Length: 301
Picture 1 (tube, helix red, strand yellow):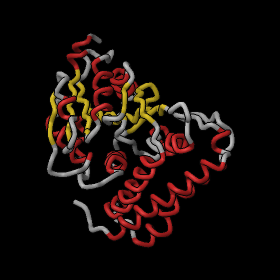
Picture 2 (cartoon, helix red, strand yellow):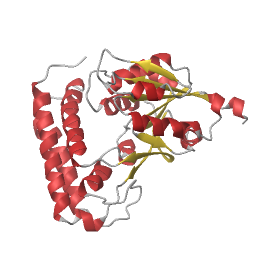
Picture 3 (cartoon, helix red, strand yellow):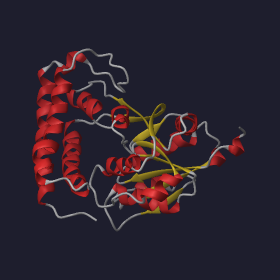
Picture 4 (cartoon, one colour):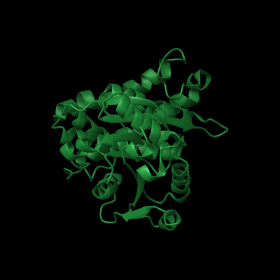
C-alpha cells in the first residue's frame, strides 16, 4: 500500500490550561511515521485562561474553540464536527504519542478488521516514584483492562467514521467517564473493539493532589453515567458503589508483578508499604465524595 492509499486520520485533542503538555503532544505529532499528508490535527481549546491558545497557534494546525461548555467531551464533539478523516484518533493534551502511534493504531484497525482500537497508555514516573504515582498507573487509563470490558479511554482511541455516524456525539456535560459510556454504546451496537498494544501514548503519573481531584471527577461522572444507563438507585448503592473499593483491594493484595498485559507492572515493594494503603484509602474517600455529590446533581444533557 502506497502512502497515498493510507486512510486519512483526524487527531482530536481537547485542551484546557495545559500549555506545556500540548506543546509536547504537538511536537510528538510532528514526528509521526505516518505520512504527514494523510492526517490532520485538530486541537480544541476548552476555555483556557492562560497562554495555551498562543502555544497551539505556534504550530501549523487548526485550533478550534469550545468556550460555551466546560467539558472535554464537548470539546471532542467540536473536533468531530470539523474532522475529515475516515478514522478519528483521540488523545489528551497531557499525553505524548510515540512516533509510531498513528501508524500502529491504523494498522491494528486494519489487521484486526476492528471498528475501534484502545491503545496503550504508558505512565512515566518522577525520580521519587511515589505511592500516588504507582496507584495512578495501576488503576487509571488501563485500556488493556477496559477493552476486555468492551470500553476504552479517550487518552488513546482510534475510531472508524461509521461508528461515530451511528453512535453520535459524546454526552457533553459529563465531568468524567463519557468515553466509557460512548465506547460501551458502540460495542453494545455490535461494533468491535480491540486492544492496540503498539499504539502508545505516554502520560505523566499524577501526584497526590491531582490524583484525588481525578478520583473525585470520576466519582461524580460515574453516577451520571449510571443514570444515563438507567441504573436503579438500588444498583447504584449496592453494586456500583462497591466496584472501586474492590478494585483497590485487588491492587493492594494482588500477588506477582508479571501479569500478562499490564501496561505498568506494579512495584511490589511500594504496594506492600503503608503509603499505598493510605493513598488507596484517600482515593476511595475522594471518589465516594464525588459520587455523593453526583447523586444530588440533576440529570445531564
